[in-house]
Length: 280
Length: 327
Ligand SMILES: Nc1ncnc2c1ncn2[C@@H]1O[C@H](COP(=O)(O)OP(=O)(O)OP(=O)(O)O)[C@@H](O)[C@H]1O
Ligand SMILES: [Mg+2]
Image (cartoon, rainbow over all chains, first blue to last red; front, side, top):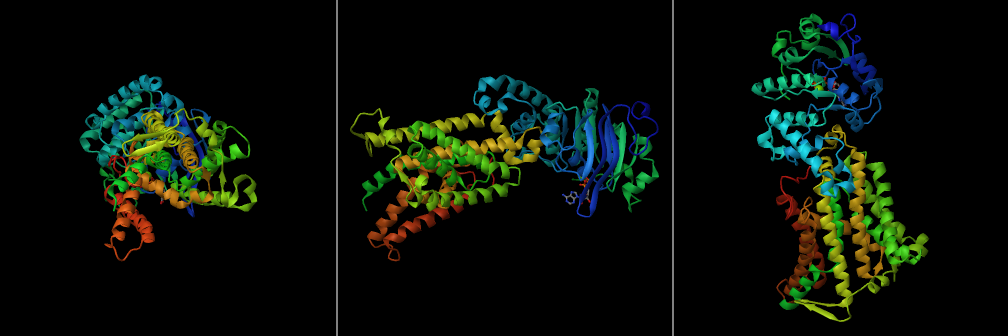
């Protein structure tokens, strides 16, 4: 199975058959601390890749750098073969690389459906002058709303359609953020701990949904501490520790790797990797 | 105390052109703060640029009044760009600091002797607005409606001023129901989220600053046409805070908020003054004298503003869920 993902043997920074995202020499320092120091990494197209690692490994910082929300000290990366380093965050999103945030960013004083509509890109009514004339954008708005309602149903948020996002529970906000990110039909979606705080019953249906994204041609890169989820849906796992990529491979292989278990668990060897979760 | 006179004064404040001027400035501030979350503490400067732009256009550049108004709108756009380009990429507080400073710098520049040949220095400018009354289609005479008794010029000024208020209100309503307005509201909540969805946040904030500034500039023009002069001392920080009071009273993120807020504010100002003066005159408030009444009512208004922000932060018209003070 790994044959269609990787060229040669699986190793940190290994070449992929068809990478969608390629990053090299990405470093980010905070004062004396090197939060990210990635020599080389490639994300396979059309697959579900998990980025795992202990708290403070630099996963979120790496996401921020790739999506233009933070500036690296060094590094370059390409998305679909075109340079993406130094591109501002909104342009990254327009190129089809959409991310969600570990600390959920729902727009609390807007309704759920308005949150969703905001996710659609290149709307005609987003131009000031066109916006003043409803007939110029009402047709488009209707289509956007249909897409939004469809997604809300799939994420079990349709009953909350008219509620303010601020009145949703933490887990529901995570779902909303993810659904909103999908409004623009991204080619790569980057999810930072999508399952944190989502109840087990819904986790199952979300996993199916993420698999469905893959079936629809979307590449998924996600950060997750829930090893069940990682094992269940990912095609490929990248392990980060102290800013570096320390291991890569198929989930079943990587999770048996003693070096990974050590890096991941640090001093807590008695913890079972399969039940680790983070409640953020 | 003369109740009839008090009532007439209060009714007069309701449709005073200055009330309209403040309302227009508050509409601009609602675009800035209420919908986009921009902390602009220099709305007086936007109004001042509008007022001076028009007066200088007429007096120095010898433009017809209508063109001078257009010139003034261009000045406001330039002013908004100067303030916005360096600050709107930074955190929200930077805009607050820069606008408050810029408003003071603007006022000093207008009153300094160096530019007095253009700005009139601390005396300001006058005799730029006569053309406004030549546009008056209303026949000469006194017009009486209920408690109101206006000359044709007074009536004309009120029609134009409140006509502009009406137009601006409709415009804001159209703006905020559109996908464009949705982006502004998103920015108010969390700019990074909006950025992550592919919107050029900086550009939208700049548009908001310009558009809100234009409303304030029009308010400034109404103000000085009504006063028939423009003076640097009009554009003090107090002016800005009166606009904030009007806005918060009515509701920062509501279309009708600034209108209701402005009317209630100025009626209250008249009523408190009349009632307190009346009480002082009949000796019920022996610890106060007449000049202190003027100060006391501003203290009362400050107190009312505090209570308002604490107990009804959404204002009279706003939706509580839509506006909390989370800046
Ligand atoms: N803005 C910042 N300023 C200073 N240090 C930071 C900043 N952001 C992150 N760091 C540090 O960089 C390191 C990596 O943090 P990061 O958030 O990327 O970790 P993570 O892998 O996402 O962890 P978690 O699994 O807990 O979310 C941490 O040591 C953190 O303290
Ligand atoms: Mg993280």
